[in-house]
Length: 287
Length: 330
Image (tube, rainbow over all chains, first blue to last red; front, side, top):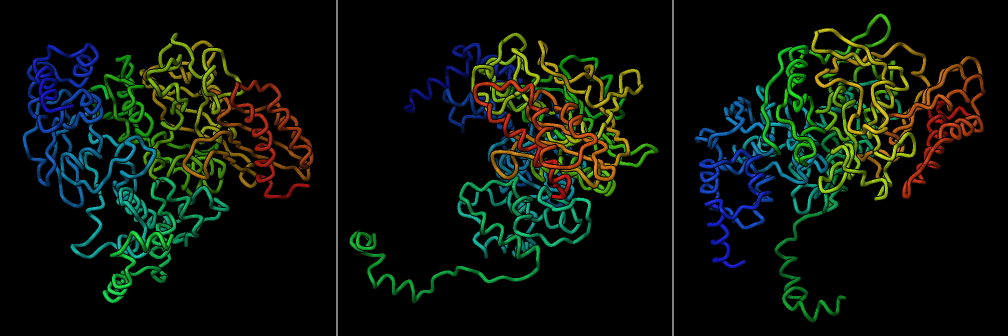
């Protein structure tokens, strides 16, 4: 769609005269009537409000309060149809916010507090990308209503490192190549950190041979780690590295790193050899 | 998601009254199913009453067994020392479900209330008598690989997808429910969920506004010989195609008491008294287990794509009983 067409669509929506009955109904359900709807559309000029934007609206009603920078929680929020005040702690810092009753903790973190480390994957509890810790336990922030978090203590991926010093689990994920695209990684790491405490508690899992036998500080086998991490899906298939990272941290036994950055000498050698700077011919030969 | 009024309940009876007063109000506990369904516009409550802060999370020994709070988390329940020691079947069933994150959120009461995973129920573009009574059933002649083989009707072939309840059926649990009058009502777990009949929109026999407060399980002698088997498309974090809660109590070399409950084959956990009757008084042999499995699936009526569940159900019963006996099978 060209810019003019886009602008026409937008203008049409702003005066409301070109909305279909379905679109009117959707806006109504979102609580965007009359002046409120115009305020909303005015605030949303940054977004491309083509026809598809209505699909976006349905999922991202929180956009109405878009203010993604740390400390933005104090910014004035538009009038909400069902506003809920919450005071919670995020990575140790108290946050007082007024949220739409529909807002998920995931959207609060990303859109209101500016902590975008926590990722939105499926947004319906099937992938684990949004995993954070609430009161020390791993949960899915996409299925947690922000309104229900009054008084809770939330830890996200941003809260794990101490300054420049990575959490041991973060360091182990790098050491063991526990990611490729990295999208599931914050959820994987939050999940893995919480798993350490569950193992200290002696919690059982689906693959525990005898749930009647109890003990604390259990040493997790690879099979146990896989089962206990099954709530975190990795589309790149970095599972072997993820399991190796968790095994090293959980067991406390250091294992060798199986990769290293190429040295300057090796890179220079490769360049001179033509494998890189004369890619076409050499690649044909290699293939 | 449709806009809704949110409030935090202070005590159980008040919560029951608030929800009872509004036909489109819902209780919210862990939210793992309700919030998902609200995002999909399958559930569209005008009011949500958050009961998660009610003081209903205790797990304690009673004169007759154990009482498990409706708001105890699934993970805390599965790992409670009393549950692991005396009701390992319940621990195993809970741990077979969902993921660690979801079990940390989900409550026991909410687990009983979870709705079907039928794709036609989730897809608001499709007909579904459970979601929209009178609209028809998309699964009956659609893709029905995961659907019911027992107890279904022409109005609904959906299954109850949970794991925990299958163990509760085997353990003769009772559901304690708070009404708007402040009094409790006890529902034997086998009477809690319903078959679809011509009212598939009703998953269970709770009145609107009744709040589950506890699950009570009597003492039993099944702990040493019980097993929860779950068969699914992948090794973990998936709903069951077929599951079996099996429990045995021996007297000498003969079976004194038995429980066989099938999951994900019907609109409710499917306890097979017929299968249990075959086992009583018999020695533990593979032949006995196979006869029991045949009895359990005798009345199965598979649909176009789920005929495999009949044979899978039989084999799963045999395997679950063998594992309940820890391999001590002649």
